[in-house]
Image 1: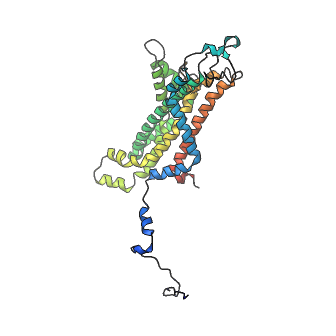
Image 2: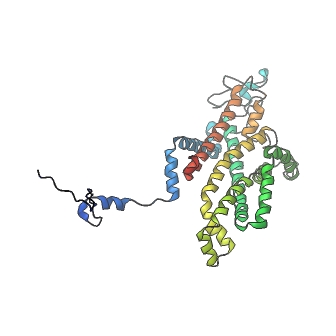
Image 3: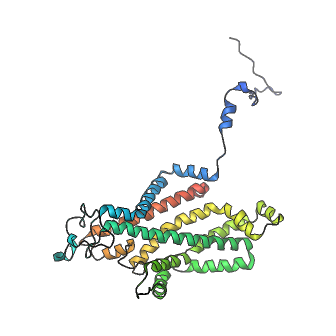
Length: 347
């Protein structure tokens, strides 16, 4: 077989011929190239997130807890007990109203046992309490995120005295020992504004006061993050082009800058929700949160401290549930952060 000579360049080196892209006889390369399409940043982030096994497991666990909390009334009907319906037959008055049976009174009637002293069903109280925690945490995260985004946009874009003043306010709120201050302020606000017409405490107003207090002390983190991003974005060409075309500051803030901030805003919201769950549970544990006998995870842990030596199951159930909820949401929030900003984890 005769060997075909290879073409050489002007210096004698052997060169390789590249196929002509316009030549359809070269093979399926043009078809493969046409099949390649661009992907949006959201799709790229979702692809990276799906590859993170820990984040996806955490996402599934968080979704299961959220679904159970939403379906708490239905689950209670299936089991047959409400969150504040006592079962006096399930506790023994001769032993200090401790549950009858092992593992805190777990049975076919009470899947997770009953509460010592009251006979409340732990299963129903767990998921009703989880629903309370999720309502407070999600609404507080939403309000604090919106407030932080608006203040951060204004501080970063306008600069000057406005930025100086708003940055000073952020530093003041960030310098507060938030949990201690919330514990001190919550009873004052709830006693002053949450009393109903019968002289008692309104559950709705109580939750509203807790949401308001948590939101007020949580917005500064988001505002600081957004401000830093806006300081960089306001020098970009698309902002200058919008100014040249006569766009007002409202259009620039909410039509030009805000769409470029969805990634840090989403990360901030995803990490704020589990933090708020822990804060709400801490308030209820310390007696300044949800009013008993309304179900709440922190309140259940507070009540369980009286019985943990004799009925450890009662403390384990809400404690494990709270840890799993907060841990799963934190892991998922970290996964979202890494997916939206893959360079953050690189050295």
